[in-house]
Length: 277
Length: 198
Image (cartoon, rainbow over all chains, first blue to last red; front, side):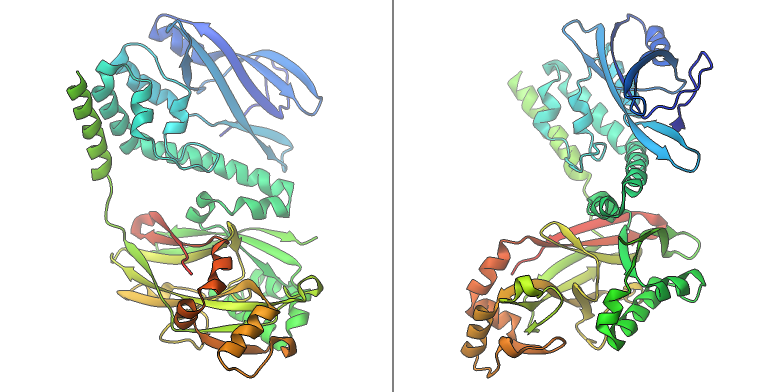
């Protein structure tokens, strides 16, 4: 994740959203590398509600490529997520398709030219943020690949997926989803509750629990050491006076489950506490 | 040319197949002999005055196939919505020790298998249907008199599901599912989902 808040001419800009959309032509790998660093950027400032444009340079910009009729011409459509960082009052953005450039390079070894379709993004499992964790189907694989290159392409794809790049694509998804989580929390309790319904959230052990002031106090003082103790306390408060217990649940604590290598077991980390409205 | 293509397809398919591995934890739903009960909770508010809550126990055999399991947790979804309160919305018990709900599986991770009973408390049934069932099983009580905190025992789940399939036809329209989140040593996480069959 990297913050974008300063333009090459020195002007500080606070971007709410960035969207890149351009078409270009190049012949050599060197041109592609150069292109990656010098991208014409359209910036929409949602605060000011106007379109702003600037030449913009990014060191590690990457994207994915789609060929038009002329295979030397590549259409680029890149969306960047918005991540408000309230404490600093700045906007950080991250590129969702970070690792796909690596795939493009690998495929280029087979093709000697870039010929990657936008569908590639949908094919790579867990890279899509729409919660559809589809494994690529065989027909998807072969649908856009020249017949002669099916086998070598398939091996290349699978090799790429199961090796480091696959791990990296998971990391890309994680970064992206953590960014989404920060945004969901910033929007409010209901959005945060909706967010944790996803399979990704299960994988990361997201849950929430409703708490009373008494429970929060004990939690913050360290009198409650683990989730089991918290739930035992909840059970005893509930059995004492059910109605009163229900009325005092004014807080919602979100937590995640994380593996601790030192003690070789899962630990619970409280991510955030909301005051119910 | 066509033969070559066929070979290529099979080769890719095989590569995918061999990528699969044995699951560290397997889960099997068992037809439970636990008792179905009726009760009243806050969900039976004024807008639901014609309904009563029904607790339907489901039973799962969780088999730990790997000694590398370091964490286990479950996520219960009703109609794609996560139930968060494992005291109020649902309760999980060890079949062999039902005195207290399970809030942590840590002490079970060295077992080869554990049978859990999940008492789902989120479904409603009309009072008329509930009373008809009580009458059928010759239980001389009525859900109309049920007070908050009381329960009426009906009959074992496996008996009810065999003899009164219609009770579950309505429930089957609501998709209940359960996800098990398993942590292995080194922190790898494995998620296993099961649709609950009534």
